Image (cartoon, one colour):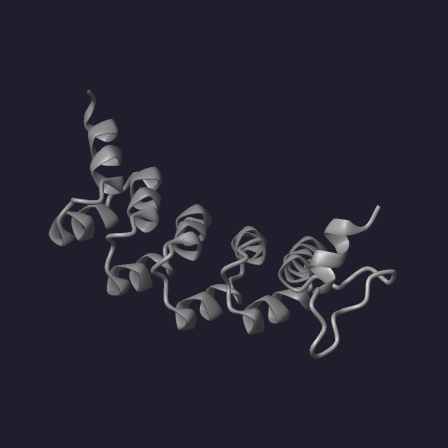
Length: 148
């Protein structure tokens, strides 16, 4: 196994030590740094550092890491690179206020993707289905299942 492949594997392994992750985060190979950014074992301080990486793919990986704090996600929502914002816009786990901000993005692809994600998170009942009233047994979702 060549040394770059070994670093790549180590960077993504959940049992890689914090010291090794910090060392790999400074690697000259973009894919190694991206892999560190994807690693759920990467500490928040390291994710903050990687969120400023010159490579947008590394910043995208930070945006997709489940341990990235909201304040950092909000910062990435203002990233200069549209691909980073687009990556955030398709994340259904993103706080709604960040998705709302991205829905107003100047890039039409970013705003469309954020609007689509918001629709997925907050679907509107079809007009022919009415939400259940207080005390009624069936919800509109149950009505939908029984609709022809």
